[in-house]
Image (cartoon, rainbow, N blue to C red):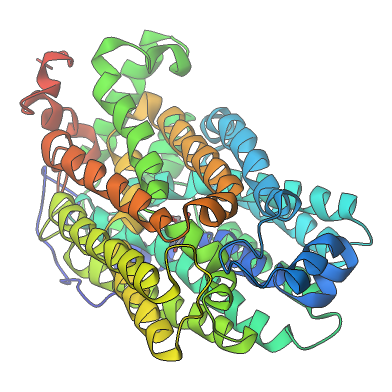
Length: 502
Ligand SMILES: OC[C@H]1O[C@](O)(CO)[C@@H](O)[C@@H]1O
């Protein structure tokens, strides 16, 4: 688990679950490492799509265009085929995440993480050995299934396993590993960029994070909630005892889980029907809005295309990759800040501070680009200003790292009652993938036409999402999952939707 913010014995919230044991920390670090595969893919695809031998083999038209187009720096890499390579993963991920909700109920959270790891591994092998575009796309579809499964199961796993008082910190581990994956992939791209078959290595090495997380997932036990839900009471008691500490009496927590699980079963309704009931409207709105907004911060545009972007604003191809690595490291460090404060200052505080920071940076990037490269983007940016753009993007990445990055996994995984939690998380992951798909598919065209104003577009969205958080997101810090309904009951707007619990 990233971050050194843990207090050894955090006290009790809701009667149980305040204690941090070595076992729960290790288990959650291992589980969070599932984020590695998603991050690795995000980092690798951005770099590989700027490698000449790769473009030469699969997308020669893009290379020809890059050689000709010297007039407008924003349009060089504008190719629908190239973007469809990147985004095919998201369509597959979307489909997989929807299937995953039933599977995580039937097979448990842990097993879905294993399944995701294996599928991703197969995709990595196919991509590393790709002989044509069809293999490339097939590989990406498998990778997409992999991350669809792991992104659905892991955040729920972490939220259910963590002591409630520190749930936020534990959950940020997932985004932290996504960040490690991104940075590792950027470094690998930097090393392989000069080799003829560097792209094969970059794509094929995705096997390594897949093996690490799959083996890790095989070693941990499932969450007590999931075990109870599947009628494995003895195992649930054992799992709880292990993570909460041997001297802790886990019977009260177990009894609560059994109660919640029995109530869910008694209702005997399809979760996908239940989730659309009026009383779950607030939850559903959050599960859709949070990942949608996360992508509209513009982060993926920067993460996918950081190398492309830096190259097109005047950095050489080497320095473009270095710039991407720096950006990734800043993001990583800032996630640790989130780990340290999310359970003290709360989710809303981080959303608001991070949002303001990102908004200011996006506006500043737009102004610098407009002033230096001209409104049509035909003037060259000087090295000094290119560095200023990089600094602004780093500040932006830090803002994202302690707010919308980790919190977009945390919120959907913690607001739902047990019976519809996997469904809620699936919807959330699907929205995340769908939004990423649409944005990545349109970004380069948008950059080509809107030029510097692209950044103002995202700044506008950041303003909207920050206002949304201020008015509509209740604070969930420290509240046990089983008592989460209280935050809606107390909320000025959402309380009219929920049924007050006796
Ligand atoms: O670290 C940046 C990455 O984090 C995510 O937002 C997931 O939370 C990805 O969509 C993005 O590429």
